[in-house]
Every structure is written in structure tokens, then in C-alpha cells.
Length: 165
Ligand SMILES: [Fe+2]
Image (cartoon, rainbow, N blue to C red; front, side, top):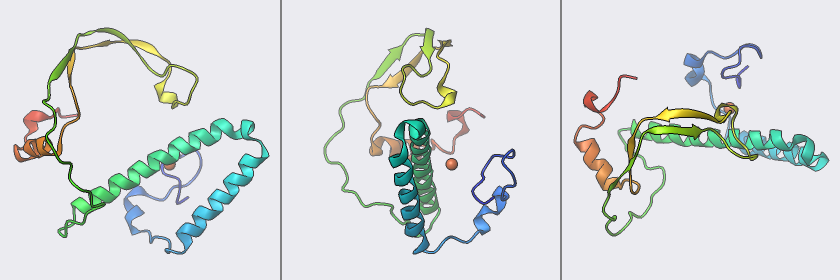
């Protein structure tokens, strides 16, 4: 019940608004749980990898999403702290980013959706045609300094920059 986030058909769920009231497992029990999962997975995979292969791949991709959510939650929590904790100290990049330019992409009919036989989620299929309005993409990733200009300029607080949805 505690691990069921969405699935009404599976059974009862713990109410989401009360999740923050659940106590966390002890530090000793977390690596023990992980070791148990690893042990069970190794036993499973040693039995017959072809039978469980696709399910294991799906599980690994799902777990990757958990890791991304955990990191996002940690960074959000840190951002709310008046102590300004840092997730990981990194040396700032040195040098100047190359000049940014905008690349134009014309509108038109295009195919979207997964192609090939490797892993994808079910919402990435079937591949199909869509009309895509014209758009622009920057020639490179934005730098922290450019992002700071956006924040300082009211990028997050001025609703003119955001659609209601
Ligand atoms: Fe999940």
C-alpha cells in the first residue's frame, strides 16, 4: 500500500497529501534493502535472461526515472532552505561560451514517435505524422550566466513569459 502511487486497480494507496508524514527508514535498513533487491535480481537473471529481459529493461528505465525524481526533489528541498545547502560542489567552468545563435526550423508535416526495436515507453508509440509549427532552437546549451540574466530579469515572475498551462 505504501509503494502504490497511482494504481487504484492494484489496491489501497496511502493518501498522497500525507506522504510527508511517513517516517523514513533507518540508515542501516536502506543499504540492506538495496542488497536484498540486488540479490533477488541476480538470482532472477541467472535463471533465464530471455524470459525476463524486457521486464528488467523496463524496470531499469523506470528506476532511472526514480533517480531523476529523487535528485529533483533534493535540489528543490535545498532551494527552499534558508541555509542554501549545495548538492555537489563543482568547480565553475572557465572560459567564455561561444556566441549563441538561433537556428530556424520550418513548419511542416513530420513523423514523431519511437523508431526501431530498442526500448521505448508505450506512450512513445505508435510513430505517426503531426503538423509541427515553425520554431527556433539555440545553437548550444545556455550558460549559467545567461540563465542568471533570465532569472534577474524576472523570467520566473513575469507571466508574460509563460502560457497559463
Ligand atoms: Fe515508480
